[in-house]
Amino acid sequence: ASAVEGLRGWRDLTATMPDELTTLANILIAPPVPFLPESAHGRLIVGIIGVYAGSVEDGIKAAQPLRTLAEPLADLMGPMPYTAMQSLLDPLWTAGAQNYFTAALLDRLTDQTIDTLLAQHAAGQAPVRELHLHHCGGAMARIPTAATAFAHRNAAYVLNIIARSPDRAGFAEHAGWARATHQTMDPWSTGGAYVNFTSEPGQDKVQASYPPDTYAHLVAAKDRYDPTNLFQLNQNIRPSAGR
Image 1 (cartoon, rainbow, N blue to C red):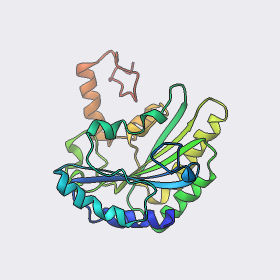
Image 2: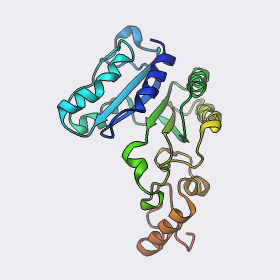
Image 3: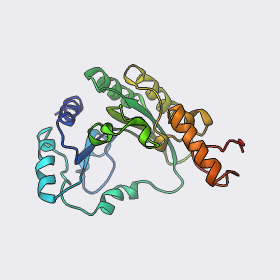
Image 4: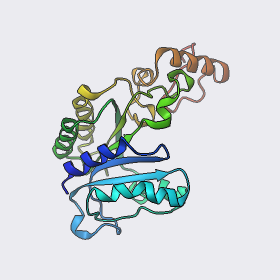
């Protein structure tokens, strides 16, 4: 199956997945990892990753429809420790590389959205460039917006745009590609940002990650627990003093 067909099929499945199953679709160039055939290395592929919160038996049943999307190049779905899932691709993230992340929150994933993402991926030149589509909805969408710091619960998908290079050569252009890809998503964006997938520092980026009332609550917490802004090497919420 083509990348287009696979992504459309995955999108359709997310509409009926149980709350316990969370998945993402990754548009990428196949890396030289031993669990993929050498014939796939360097080619455009779509990877589907999933985690099930429940029994192994129920998880196997819930994941089965994913196997109908295409004949897989590799099928690693099955029981594994959570820490193994979290560190599955760690060997690919070598020290010293340049990385740029930016994210868009999407209210829908149409055929045109998918076509646009594939076209943008093809236009990139970064040695490693990935477009991660995380499906949302379910239980997280049924919690009131003001209940937690994460407030963008109306988003149907979170898109994480990644540009990576082993060194600084050409990296500014690769980061520009990531920003341009973000802009192409404007027709389907809910606005705002997801702070965990934001590389570029800036108070505007941080504030865009929270509604005004939520941001005010976080500033109040900062004023109480860290009024001198000792903990600032992050996407920083400044205390009222503005340090």
